[in-house]
Image (tube, rainbow, N blue to C red; front, side, top):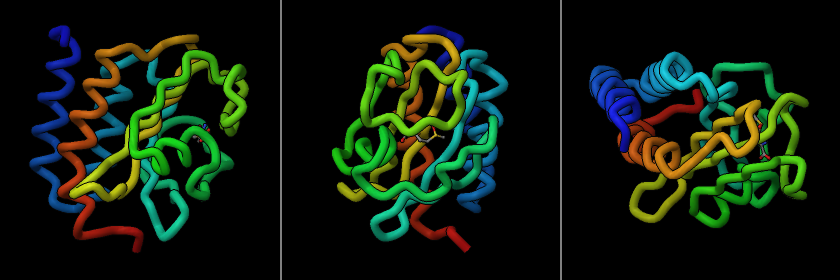
Length: 156
Ligand code: SME
């Protein structure tokens, strides 16, 4: 992982350790990602509530998708399949639920604990194919850091 990414990860690690409250920790994460990574135009957390993903802390244009059923959209697919999904061209992916007409690429990383999905990190970019191996590695590391903070939660 390049220095820039490892520096961001260390900043996020420190911020997550400082915040015991899950919402505060997620707010810090979206702020730091936005500050460090210019291609990350929309950054948000979704939290699993029954069979729906509910929008949590985010930075970027308001999304109409505040509740997404499991299996719908890129977000619902990543949670249902329990795997990271990277989409280089959202217009070419029939699963895609549009949040902004500017968006070209998306990455969704599930937040897991003991095999269960707790939620996910969703990032959109206005640049086509904006997300590579390092973005995936960074965001999967962030998901692992934040997972313990989401156990004692949250939606209230
Ligand atoms: N694009 C997502 C929906 C969420 S918005 O991008 C914030 C999807 O296809 O699931």
